[in-house]
Length: 111
Ligand code: 5GP
Image (cartoon, rainbow, N blue to C red; front, side, top):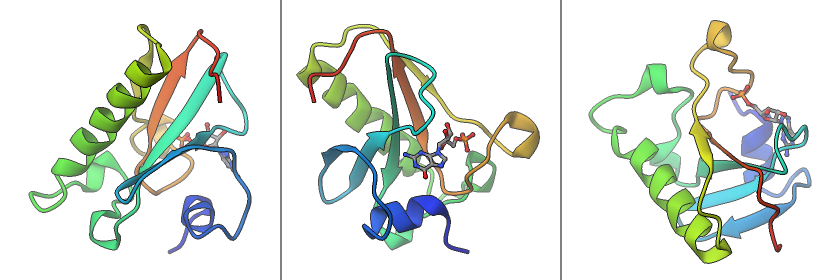
């Protein structure tokens, strides 16, 4: 079932996109819990995973991809301290069931 993040990915609803390449998109969380609060999602159909709880051998690379892009993005932005987080399942605080990596930092973005 398409989530709100699928719609953001297809540019059907607006979001403040801060990073995008052919594999990953990152945009600002609408209810930020830090000076910088971003969400990283994978763009490829084959990589769409609802939650960490749904990972298989075929999709096990996706969290690593999101973390790697977040790491590169942080370096480019000069952000040396940040938190990375996955909420897993409703009881783990997950609201949107398209895998996403939370990126939180007290450093402000220059974009
Ligand atoms: P979860 O709790 O599923 O790990 O995180 C979902 C996040 O998506 C929440 O932090 C929430 O604030 C954010 N969010 C929900 N709807 C929207 C939206 O329409 N646009 C943006 N940019 N963020 C959203």
